[in-house]
Length: 150
Image (tube, rainbow, N blue to C red; front, top):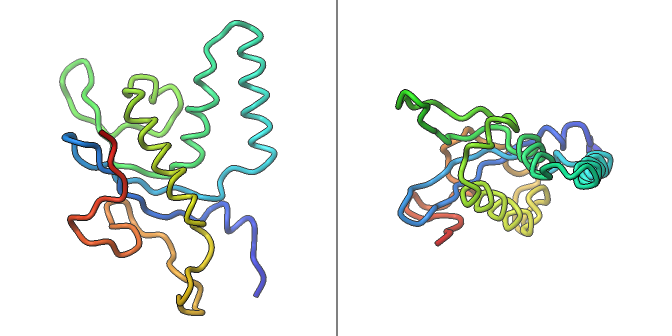
């Protein structure tokens, strides 16, 4: 059976990111969500915003929302009520940049391991299928963290 690019764009995989002293962030991300067309669109949006003297963070936040399909990040509102942060660019504007950057770097690091390719010695049945947020990545031990940002 051949590879289907549309299915590849929808495939998601779990990643647990440890933040020193703060806890862990569990995400599901789509390794193949960004296409050359979307990449050009992000770059064009960034160029246009820069030329207009506007904030150029929006393309990055948009990209995060395209790649991350689910997460367990929570925040408190003005009334002190805790809520799950929606994956929408405007909603991410109140999240500390160090958390977003740490998450993005962990995704990039995970991408270096070719997340869509079968690992040597894996079964011919097609490898792992993505799992729900909160699950451990690639069968790691419960106390093992995937990335740590100090």
